[in-house]
Amino acid sequence: MKAAPVIRAVAERNSAVQVLIHTGQHYDADMSEIFFRQLDLPEPDVNLGVGSGSHAFQTAQIMMHLEEVVLREKPDLVLVYGDVNSTMAGAVVCSKLLIPVGHVEAGLRSNDRTMPEEINRLLTDQVSDLLFTPSADADDNLLREGLAKERIHRVGNVMIDTLVRLRERAAGDGRKTAVAGAHALPPGLLEADYGLATLHRPSNVDRPVALRRILETLVKIGRDFPIVFPIHPRTRSRMAEWGLETPGGGVHLIGPLGYLEFLALQRDARFVVTDSGGIQEETTFLGVPCLTLRENTERPVTVTVGTNILVGQDMDRLEAEVMKIKRGQGKRGRIPELWDGKASERIAAALAGTGGGPSDR
Image 1 (cartoon, rainbow, N blue to C red):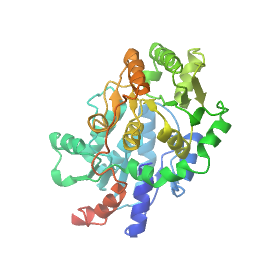
Image 2: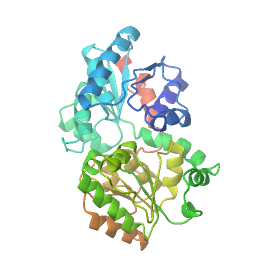
Image 3: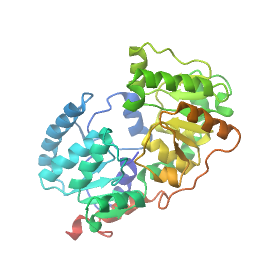
Image 4: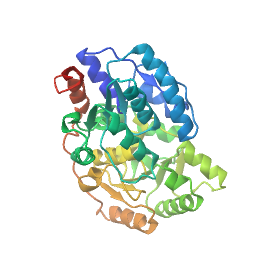
């Protein structure tokens, strides 16, 4: 969702030859291939085929394989996205080879170093040459950490570029009807009031007590709002491992969805319960109340400006916030500055030198 609009914007300028490297961390078709198709991404030029494994294993494998590709291709610049292991691994490999690095979605901070993503963000920004930020708080974080102002380019949110381009496609073609049919949802469920839920973070799904309480609370909420729960493979695996029963009642577990299918459900939901950073952003743009099962967020603008509320592990509060939504008192927000669908165009301009990029060196 982050790379697709930038690849398109650079291609439209015809300002660079692009090589797309897929690390192969998501090797399930439901978690990777479908996104390439729906986002109109080109086939990767290189697939490192890393697969799953511990953080150390994944990072080491990416670094070893990526170094070979970079030495062969000799790029003028490497772009890395977000905060996953490949982001940090790519930035470190290239910086040691003296190849300029651009970090798309720089400067986000949760200030929680128990999150592996936070470590990835901190290290990536320190070695990156171009820091493309989505919001003013990200600029402030980078400046406070001593990074030079001239390296920072506030461009807006590339996730929103993808959402803006595809939201009408998601709304059409009977997509919600197709989801309901493919996943055997009760007739009419998606045409009435419903909630949407996603879970995948270790703090929620890797602890049996925490996961059990969340599922029990969703069942309670499901008495008032049916909840559609596209379940992440990690979450399903943990439920099976610990013998947690399928919630039942008003909670409808379904398989992972493609980007367009999930967006179709998200735009019409009364609320979303999640621990995903990207969904916090999308719900803010869509004006959908978001109840985040985390104690902190690296996207505070979704709380201060948008529709997001940090519920943490307080299940009583989660129920209370849903009841507010039922009474028509759900949180209302607005769209943050520069979340206008043009962030990728600003990045492409910077890379071409018109906004301050590698050609200025």
